[in-house]
Image 1 (cartoon, rainbow over the protein chains, first blue to last red):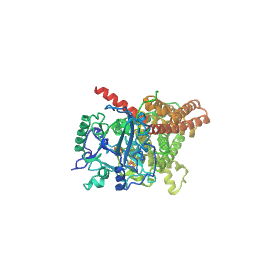
Image 2 (image 1 turned 180 degrees about the horizontal axis):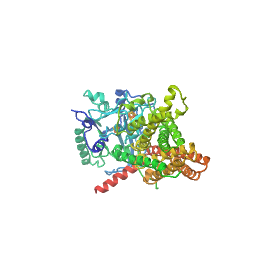
Image 3 (image 1 turned 120 degrees about the horizontal axis):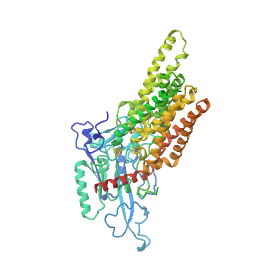
Image 4 (image 1 turned 90 degrees about the horizontal axis):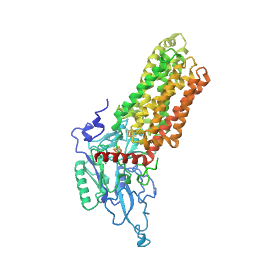
Length: 307
Length: 312
Ligand code: SF4
Ligand code: SF4
């Protein structure tokens, strides 16, 4: 029996849904990229606290980003996007896409070569993380029960149970969870399950010097985020928008959501993610029909001929 | 199709490509082969065609054993394969598949072992086994055949229930392709192993299987817009074209070779080859769609635009 279709998509509170009684309020992250300075303190604090192995030295030629993506060994990833914008940057020039302006260099872009060579440019920085989806595809498809929903509504892998089947990795619509080389198991952000259980703040949020990463009860964070967008709009930053805040979206809203200054895909985020299991009842129905057709064909092959 | 306009983060993929290696593509084939040949065996058993029965049972056991090896080999932690048996989760097609395999495997095994009864000496304990085994094998063979359609088609859901764009959107067609491919490969075993006098049902199974397989592949190659592209280009495109050519050859040989054992066997081999090519083609098409951010961004953008237009 499939669970009530409502539990595969749509807004809901995930911890009680998963069977927790007296669950504490759902906790999450609000990452406000408009104040991120790209210091990567979050990346480092996460590695330190969670004892995540190093990923080696890799120069990617992607601005100051030498991490590249969220992986089994990077549970926070700071993205750097360089964009040139026409002088006077009218609000709402969005979707222009990244453009390589030669950072890192000895001087800021446009400084060398005199006034003619100067351009207006902006730098977008964003600390990405597991979204702790309301409807987490990784958790839905895990065949061992290794991935589970905590009392805080977050999504955590149990490393002593994961057998490295890799299903969660193909299922995540954000490309977050990943297999660790040489280890074989799947790893991702735990939202510092050990720390928050002890009433502490996750390591990344604790280390962030600008409060770009904010941790707290999701309801409060959503209110704070809405107020922040309104303030930015008043100040003429028309391109500010929230991402993952809406319980009506394809994953039922994210436990870790963001304030962005451009389209999501500019930061490497999917523009309209949907939890794959939303369509699972329809998939089983199609498989059932195909199975019936197969059985019927086999029966017909044996009874329906002269030889 | 014109080059789609889209933005990305330094051209990097948004999704993680499947970490499944070639073992999983191979399993798609062997799992289907096990299912198809157990149906062939059950048909042979019920209609008095012993050659179909024994070839089907033996192939089914070999294929289901290979399947288990492929599945365990592909795990990041093979020694923990039994953790799959901790839970039964309808939201995880892999969990459902584990339980289907756990039901099918032993039944196929007993049915195949029962084929050995005829070689046992007639006296003593082995004489008893000689009499008891055939009816036990009959029951087990029927149990395997009843589970077989589920084994052949759940793998379509296994691939579709992911964020991999060209697999997910193909969810209505993947089980159809895999059902057809399983029937055709089972029929191939019959065409290779049985004398022409017994191979009639295998010929008809080959035609039905090929029809389902070709219909489903045609749909994924044409119906999905941009997401059909990975199935038509690159190694996936080559594999699916090879699969189609081999299927056509196999069906032609099956129909024309009614009196020739050699032609029948060749057509059976072509059908088995077709099934391998189709499975690897579908597998690689999906992987290619996850590797290129275009296939993630463009369809999602279009979906958003349609929704915004509908909202006014
Ligand atoms: S973002 Fe991916 S890994 Fe994180 S909870 Fe959602 S589906 Fe799972
Ligand atoms: S890799 Fe581990 S956590 Fe991911 S689905 Fe498989 S068993 Fe679950």
